Length: 353
Image (spheres, one colour):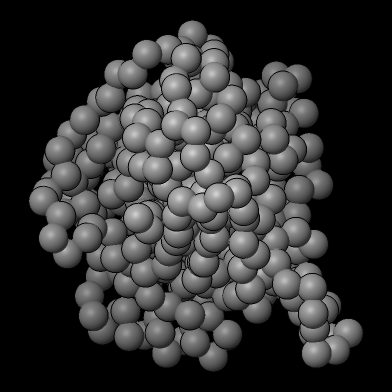
């Protein structure tokens, strides 16, 4: 039996970066890009490398370009760490695993280093494949925590829960990372929203942007933990923007969230040093009349537009800048309308955001 599981890119619509600071956010899945993990039973446990794991290059320039795109580590470490963390979870929760091995490999077309959560998509797809292979059921909120633990604890990769929650739930999710809830049970309040409530959205990204993330010279984490008023206030404002957007969506006024998306980015510029390439993307989109903010930490933007004419203007103005412009596919073609759901799995140990 061959098991195939997918996970998709994601975009933070509003509220980020407060997700890492007990804030509130809205995110949605982007089915235009996916990571896929394939797993089948075999005599020994084997992890097969993908294209980004190779060590043969046509030239020294080719090696440099590969490192610029994928870093010094490929995806094999993501699979290895996910398998280890899955096994630990099963041991900790007295879940029996069948005594059989497997071979596993992954593929991904999610643009790298542009803030669309390509690494966590590989981990999510891997976790789903392992759950299917061993017939193990894990609540989605707990899955998100496990995915975060793979990155934070196993691989020492700084990350927050937002990406992992939306990739576990898919669709559109309003997330409240209330500090008390996070400390008591290890996850927040996750409310699934109907994608049909969203206004027209676009995403623009540049896989060739050499400065794909914003420049963190402001010690935001340290300033937050020291209780610096400016940073605490900013996190509260981002959370409030997410809550306002949720209320507008639920009231059928999704066309009004564009100004809040712009406010989200403007607040970010006051607290983070931005790279010129990232700032230029936002400015160019706004010059077309659209709203714009980062999907994550930089390299890609998301926003609202009014009509097809404005979308075509975005394409014509952003493409010459080396940007790809897409309309995100959020819901599978055969998927029913999303239901509002607040999943309540059993508490787990608190997770550090």
